[in-house]
Length: 65
Image (cartoon, one colour):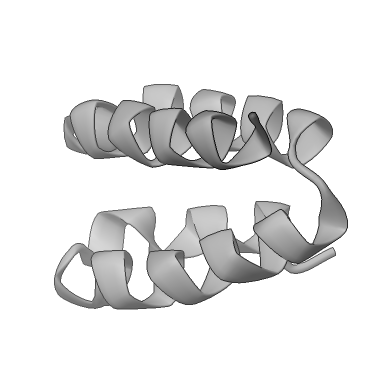
């Protein structure tokens, strides 16, 4: 079940990546819902995903707490 939530979260973040405000809002939601090990996986995925999207780099601080 939790894997489905993680995959859903990644999909939502991909769709929201055009708007940094919406992206950070969705990322905050994910940080509150996901389990600690899932947040670690999400953090690694975000580093890869935002490597070519500098406008989203500042959002990484949400999951680096």
